[in-house]
Length: 207
Image (cartoon, rainbow, N blue to C red; front, side, top):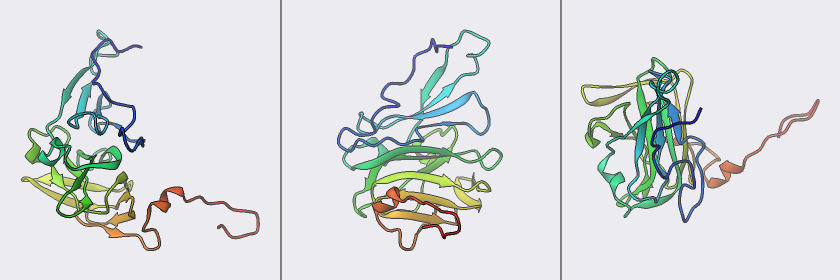
């Protein structure tokens, strides 16, 4: 079926006009409702945005979706700290916190590092987002373990259990406290970790 609604612009294409990398995670499904989705706008397309899409009227109604732009943290509303790398989204698993993670090709100017953000599925203002621990610039993706849990309680981000990984030009970083701080992986501290491959042969060790 074709969506008869008005879809957000500048989504699903190149992430940056200078560093043309796409992220595989620019759209995620809400852990609370399968007809609610989130889509990230491309980097360098003006002010970065994350859009929340509601498809509840689509299957058996007028086949239209509705969209709203979510309020974002103040540092993401300026292109002065434009970074390369990727734009990406991630949500917690179902019944594991109902949180949204986002990175928007921005770096922290005074630290020369980059961060991802976490917020509720429907933030009411930019203050609802929380900054994760800084890592090397040029972020490329974020992964949560299947048992991952976290929450925002009384305005504070709290880790539950599980592991988070974040990938940047500096390598792979691992966190056991919900991303509040990260430790770099040993022997994988450069962008070369993006080009790692593995192969095995009968009766021989993998290499």
